[in-house]
Image (cartoon, rainbow over all chains, first blue to last red; front, side):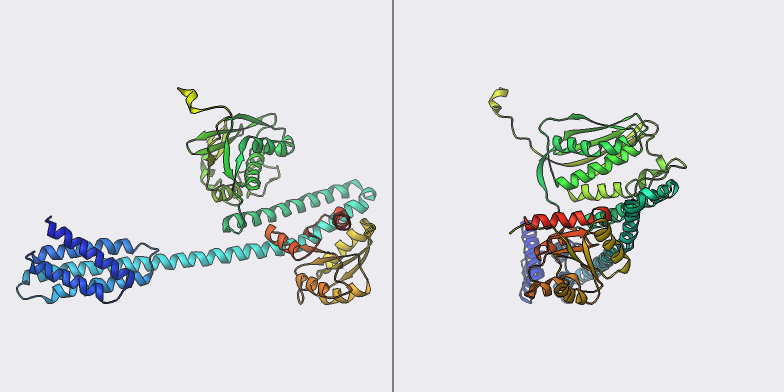
Length: 374
Length: 130
């Protein structure tokens, strides 16, 4: 590449960017002049055309990323057509060049059209997706509200009967009332979970991200969830936690993620077993793990674990306790805290759910200095 | 100001089933004196005639919602200081914050626990009076 061609290429790129950003005639005219003076200075027509085309295509395709506005795309197409025009018009003495140029021109026009089409359909798809998302959010919110009203009447009536007349009712009636009451509680949890999930995913829910010392959070989560685990004859245990570990997270949401993972692990553990919680530093993240000694996750269920309302088959005859939303909520919340979630499972041996959150570099212990390492 | 117990509660709720459940919870279980209104407009006249210690006000009602009722109550000399507790099925934290900012004593979320509804109101009442 001669210095003349490099300079020419840069001059074109500048003229094009100028035009794409500001529009107008002047940069176009400049591009035309640049081409003419290059030809006059003795550069070959084909070389000039090639540089011209290269500069155009490169900048154009950069500008046509999906987020670029259609106005930029339109300007780019107009610039391209006009800037090539002088070369097409300049046929005398350049018959061969003209033929080649026309080919290049058509090729370029096709590429521009394709790029603009791709941009438009990507845009349409995105608009449609947004519309559906907002419809869904509205629907979920409305349904949750509409469900709560009749549930309030059912839940309230049962509560009043049990509180006021419980002592005087036959045992069989009391038992059935307790079944109804327990299930109205379950329905309430389900509605709350749907709302939580919808809020976590739609981003309405404000996340208060702070630096949190991890160990006390894990201890608290174990304390809070121990009674639930005991219901299944399961013991929750805190294992190895790297000392001084701190995470960037919303405390309340982190507690909800831990609760959902611990209650899931408790439900799938055989009685007498232990669920272990641990945390280690992993590069710039902290990995928190919840390990059970349950039956493991079937190969066929693995890609649906985090889907809403997905529940692994419970043993026939055991009523499902959960709502099928706990793990979806955990995933949505971890992701809103810039983290990721996953699991490792060995059929017959157990499952480890883990999630990674951004770590806060630990403050050096008092008195420690770098000099001490020498 | 001498602290006196909560006695008279005006319940404003448009759903007849929830009217029944909530009034049983407040009166039969909770031992309060309760008057029930089915609309915001009825609540405005009852607030003057019944002279409640506290108003338990549903947020979502057709015609005149709980927020409009609260604003109207505050604008009247005889009800301007009557404490109001909202009752709502939409219990997102930013909404609860908003109801408190409007000058309500607190928020009861639906579904409520009938056995403890009156106690929840008494707790808010005592924090308010004390």
